[in-house]
Length: 216
Picture 1 (cartoon, rainbow, N blue to C red):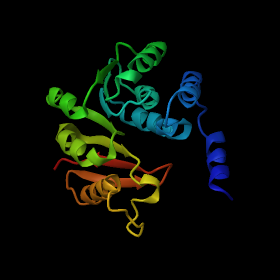
Picture 2: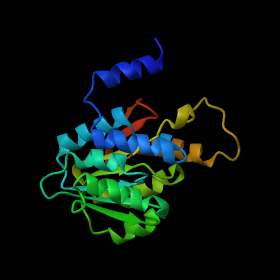
Picture 3: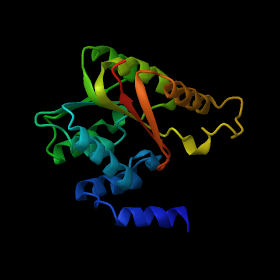
Picture 4: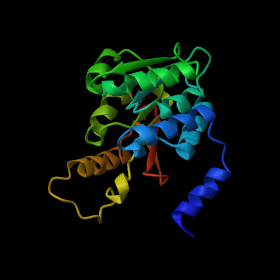
């Protein structure tokens, strides 16, 4: 049985993709370069489920892309909850705002356009219930250190692409200039032994790492 057949079966036996998200997915694939960066149906439903379980009042997303994951995470927001999402590319801003508005979430989502490190410095006083990191992989460790102490005990950090196309596995041969893969491996190894979090790596799509914040 092929991986594609398994994924198709999983999609058919999961919550259907909401129409607005299906429209955003189609538009992303028709109009943007590297559309595979978008979260997609199955992973989006997983993010929605996790958000519903936590019922977060405050969410931080590092790496918006077109806002697909943003809308999924927003589905589980507590009443009057809020998302701060960070996107480095200003060319994506209008599309993100358009879909956030179409979802009726303009008052619940603050879009920051700029360097994530600079934006996080402005948000240093916030306390997060849920954090989703899906940006430049070479900075996974940096973003984690900038936000982990702002996540409440029992809160959740989610990091995407931690399998990195299989290159995160230790037996995969690396090129000398493959700095992204080295950063992904180093981050994965670090959080495995960090007392502030309890990790669970899910081998779905390109790898989704769930980190439960401890009281440490």
